[in-house]
Image (spheres, rainbow, N blue to C red):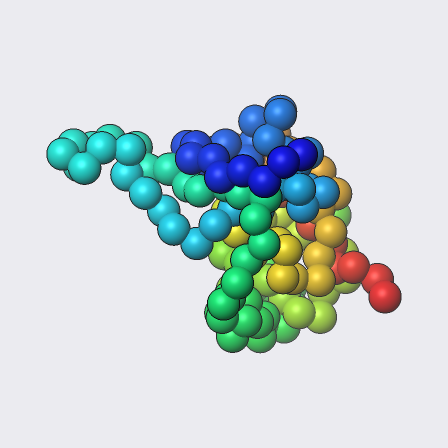
Length: 141
C-alpha cells in the first residue's frame, strides 16, 4: 500500500475493509480528532488514519500501571473468560487472559505489547449489550 492519509468516522476501525489494516498495523489511527463541519457543533467527529509512521509520540501517555483484581474487572455475561476494560489506561499490566476493550484501543495499539484476537459485537455485561469490543491479549515474549 502506498503512503496515505485518510479521514474517516471515529467508528471506522470496525469496518470490514479497515479492521484488517489496523490489526496488521498497515494503517494507524492518528492523534487528532476532527469535526467534519466547523459550523455545525452536532456534526459527527472523525479521525485521521495513515500509513505514515508516528513521530514525537509521548510514550508516558501509553504506559499501563493498573494491576488485575477480580473485583475491578467484571466478565461478560456471555463470555466469562473475557474481562471488561472500558478504558485503555485501566488495562491491567499483569493480566495474561483475554480483555475486551473499546475500538479506541487502536489509537494506542502500535505502542502497546498486546495482540488483537478478534472483534465482537455480541458481548453483554450485567444484562446490557456492549458496543463493539476488541478482544486483546498481552503478547507472550
